Image (cartoon, rainbow, N blue to C red; front, top):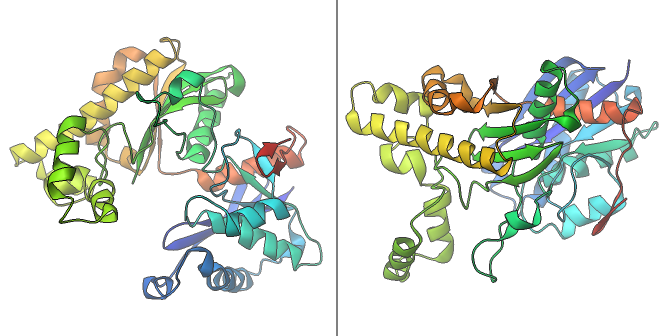
Length: 362
């Protein structure tokens, strides 16, 4: 059976896992010292620090790069691209290191994996599946309302598409024949319309959709504009953005970004109960909107992410969307599996890998 090493950098951790076929043999979460991370001017500058910690963990776990059939790395932010599994090459590595439009720890995944492969004797291929820059919007989904602005496709494609494959298997249908509304309910919330293998529309959690644990989602535009101009001498542009992206949502209303705490508080606190119910209401409303994008022709609604572990909250959402059809739950995250399975589909010749050449894909 094929052996795959998965490398998944996140904000303060790097996850690694070893798969043999579809079986996950082990997983380790490498927690990075926040004080050390803060000493680096940019996320890319963390490369050597994180790589050394990955190598140290591999040695501890007795994993040799030379025994691997492939390395599967988290994909970073490149130019807009179709979903699929990509071979990591020098072009991708150079772009992520010097040209990526957004600083994100995901950009380190391919860099670390490629370096580990190149410095080994076997040089196993490095793949990335469904990176952060997957863009499959239909043209009408891009229109924002004024020609100067455009809606963008930026979401957790990896987790959402992985659970879509799980669901299609459970329904005994071909993945490319299924229509799903997928709600990724986690630290960030994205809700999308997944039509026959393509995410044709999806909410960007920093711009739109329901409010989340610390993001505001949609806001009243006229009042927002008035507020910004009123306070523009008090806050910098970055401080204003931070207020809505990092300090909004549940955190702004209740002083906590922990859903379990908010739900428990709502048992005795009427305001907390209202805010929790409003969050579920907005999620359900967006799910209904994406069902309309698919013309009501959906095989199931898929709910995934850590929020799904709260049964009380899930019940609030399900009660509002029950008439849309089957609701399937996938609590937690499936990114490690998604990366491993993407590489396996290529190794077993179930699909061809894609080649990213700057702005083009072949």
